[in-house]
Image (cartoon, rainbow, N blue to C red; front, side, top):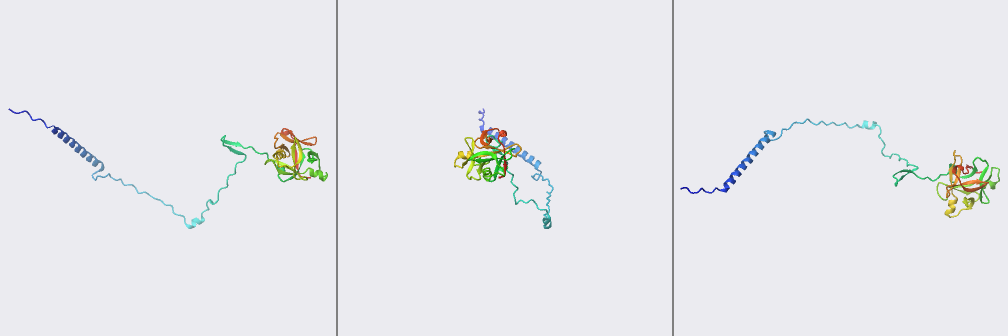
Length: 252
């Protein structure tokens, strides 16, 4: 009587599975080799398609004769002229835009600093600004007048004692004395090292309509002008168009 069957070796199933896996790997590798040869050809390398040669062209260098006869190029040894700086405008970093800069009133051309001049009332020939008894006045002064009157009506234009752009008027026959306003009356006072005196003795020429005459505006009282009232020179609040106008004349 046969005995009971021997128990199966559990390792036999594992070996069988491994054999199947190894066979699958070998078959897959063979398929990959066949596919590669089909793509690359029998030599194992991809066929190379010949490319046309690259054509190069070179421009011939100019000869010495051509260089000598060629027109000269631009001169780069000098810089182009600098652009002129803008005038009358400034950049406002606060507003971020260009704004018109405040300008100091410039004297009339005939009131150039250093000139010796006389001032005649516009439209009233023969009436000139002068000092008498150290007060500013308007009197008849002509070439036939005496030397004292003619010198009293002559002034040297100086740069404004209080600031540029305006002028101060120094007496010719009393050097060191300037026309200045005091208590709103025009005096001829000795120059003092004092800011108030400098401001009182500085006047700005305001051109009138037509450009042939000017008005004299006080530096420290912008709304007041040197006016003639009953032959006296005083400082009054006026509109520029209503202020006394003067014509700059050569000295007598």
